[in-house]
Image (cartoon, rainbow, N blue to C red; front, side, top):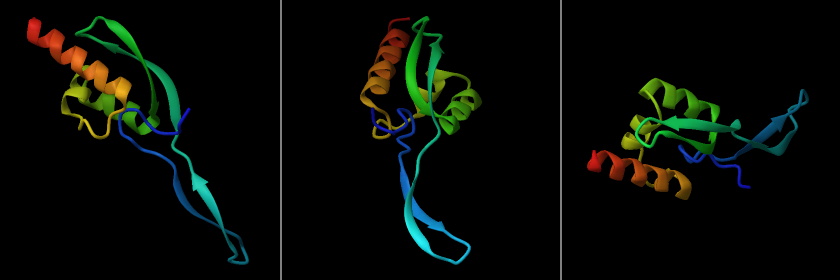
Amino acid sequence: MSRVCELTGKGPMSGNNVSHANNKTKRRFLPNLNDVTLQSETLGKGVKLRISAHALRSVDHRGGLDKYLAKAKDVELSDRALKVKKQIAKAQAEA
């Protein structure tokens, strides 16, 4: 399972551990990923995603999964999130 957020595309970054003696060794900064089930009002069901804590706050700020995906760029979304976005758009077009 890759360490990439399914909504924002945020992944591992690299940097240095810096000791008190100013020795530098390479390290990785991993995103804070969580397995969550977000409810879609349009589809009327839950969607399981692996997203970062930052993305979870962004979803809450925008007013839910449906509104977040409507404004999200397709390039940043995972295949599963893109599929959900298309299902939501189709369901809204039919209603």
